[in-house]
Image (cartoon, rainbow, N blue to C red):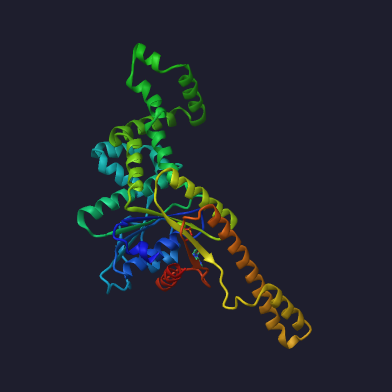
Length: 373
Ligand SMILES: Nc1ncnc2c1ncn2[C@@H]1O[C@H](COP(=O)(O)OP(=O)(O)O)[C@@H](O)[C@H]1O
Ligand SMILES: [Mg+2]
C-alpha cells in the first residue's frame, strides 16, 4: 500500500466496492496516510458518516475541498477534503456551460429539480464530473499531486462504471433525438422520422407522466443537449481518464461472501475495460492475539469451567474466543477462494477496529493496519 501511495505516477486512486464495506473510510485513511508521507492530497468523499466528516473539518456540503486540520505535514504533504454535493455539481456544470438565461430556464424547469437530485446514475455521473474538475484543477495550479475518490453508496460496485454511460446514452442517445424530433422537424421529414413506434412510445409517456411533465422533460433535455454538446462524449472522456495509467482502482470488500463476489465481478470488469486494479482492500478482517488457542481447545476449557461459578467470566471469554477463531477460519477460507480466482491481485488487509472509525486517530490506525497487511 505504501508503495502505491508513494508512487508519484499515481495521480488518482478510486475506491470502489459494494455498500457498507468501508469505501469512504478507506479513502479517508489512505488520503491521510499519503498526506503524512508527503503527498499533496485531495480526497473526495461522497457520504461520510457525520462524525468522520466533522473530524476532517467538513462542516458543510459546499462542494469545495478544504484543508483538513491536525494533519502532520512535516514531510511536506497536504490534505484537503470535500464532500460531494451532487445537486450542486449538476448546477455548477449547467452554469459553466450555459448562457445565464439558458441556465435560469433549466433551473426553473420542474423536472430538473427531481432529475438533478434523484435520477438514476446522477450521483455516479456527478462524482465523475467532479473528479474531472479536480483533476483539471490539479494540472492548472499544481495544488494536489494525488486525488483519492470515494464512490457512491450504490448496491453494486459496477454501478459506478455503468451509470455515466447509462445516463449519457439517455440524455444523448436515441431517446433524446426522438423526444426532440417534433420540436425540430416539420412536414414530411417529421412524419418519416417520427414513426409509429415513437408515437406509441410518446403516447405511453403521456399517459404515465402527463402531458405537462412530458413537455417539461422535452424542454429540459433540449436545453441540456444544446449546452452539453453530447453527454455521451463527456462520459467517454471521463472513461478514458479512468483508463489512463495514472489512475489506479482499489476494490474494497469485507471478508464476506456477498462483498467478495461483488469484488470479483468488479475485478473482471476492470480487466475488460483495461482499467488498472491496484489491489483488493480486505476491510474489517478479524484477528486474535491468541492464534494457538483453537476452537476445540477453548471450548474444552470452557466446558471444564462450566461448573465453577467463580470462573464464569473466563468461561464466557473462552466461548467468545472460540467464535472469533471460527470466524477467522471462515474469513481465511473466503480469502483463499478469492486468491485462487485472481492470483495476480495483491491484497491489503485492514483489521476490524474495536469501534467505528470516526476521527483522525482512527483513520491513522486503519492506515497503519492497511500498510502492514
Ligand atoms: N476496519 C474497520 N473497523 C471498524 N469499523 C469500520 C472499519 N471500516 C469501516 N468501519 C465502519 O463501518 C461503517 C461503514 O463504513 P463506510 O466507510 O462508510 O462504508 P461505505 O463507504 O463502503 O459505505 C462506518 O461506520 C465505519 O466507521
Ligand atoms: Mg461511503
